[in-house]
Length: 201
Image (cartoon, rainbow, N blue to C red; front, side, top):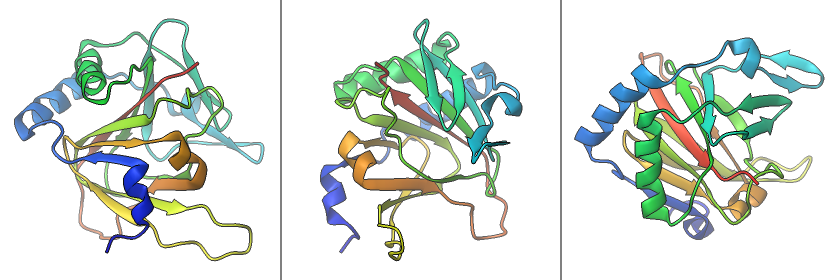
């Protein structure tokens, strides 16, 4: 039995959302069209200190849209053609519209993102944060938030492969936290691009 079965109502996971051929073509286009800013621009603030992210990050979206998280401000560059293609397919399938996308590029197994929640006030609570993965398969952990001094719960693990889609509702982001951990194996892993579509108010 899967850990935290209640997540089935809070997480929309669609394996093979894009076919292998389509996903491979889109990944090659993403590698050509996405431009990542200097790491200093996307560094986050923790206890008053700036820390570079262990991955590359770029923001795209509608005009005059910007996303603020962890003391970092990401202004939206204009949508490149490949993101418009992906966005249209995701909007059609989910029934939601998005005005911003955060593109995360993981160079290898050590590239990661720590446990966090996508629950910023600027996010439209009625629209799930929806991601699509391209490239190497990586584990995606989701675990309940526990109180101070309580042991951390075991996470539910999703294997995100190329072309997979995963959406997290607002309730999920209030009650759970998620991460992409470093790969435990020393075996070299390929690069991965993950796009998270959002609706900002």
